[in-house]
Length: 167
Image (cartoon, rainbow, N blue to C red; front, side, top):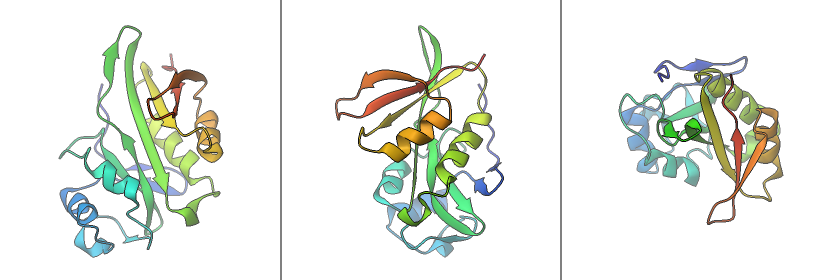
């Protein structure tokens, strides 16, 4: 299963992989995109705590790692997989995570970014997402993106939603 290292483009967004400079700036708590290779400027609320946590998943030249969610020249959040797919009894499966700065909520950017990322996957890969039950917005995002199965909850009480393999 190969996922491209190239930036993913949707109608309104670009999803470039993070570079070493991006990750160094995020880990340092820098809000200055000039310290990184990020395309454009970082929103004043980026990086969020979840973006800093995502930086721990980064590995050079890993297409399964974190990407920026950028609209125009502004980075609004991040999206990515928690590593390459696991091969289980039912086939390959990967976990996805995403998040946006509060100002970007309600514009459909999370749905568009997730749809763009999912469109790049091989048909045989199932995708799971863990979501707090009170996060109705994120539950709507995954529903719009084909996550139709509820697999239970995590130890932290998050709902595990699954998009079955396509095909």
